[in-house]
Length: 115
Image (tube, rainbow, N blue to C red; front, side, top):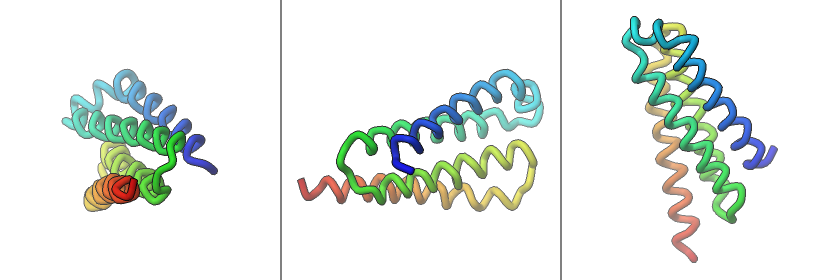
């Protein structure tokens, strides 16, 4: 699967999860105090989906794309899971996703530093 397809499905899922949180889950998220965590998950998910799209149409280091995709799963995925299930063991996974996001941006920097 190429980055364009990964970006497209990831962005569609981010929008769907954002709408789900804003409508179907909103009252529960507010009551649980987890609305901000959900919003953060959606924001980072959508932002890095757009970054994947940009990478797909450019000629950048594919390592950045794989790190961003992993970051979406680990960072946003762990926040979604934590909010929906309350499973505290997911909390320590979130920073690993953040490290993947950072690593992806650094991989992009170093791939473009040669140009």
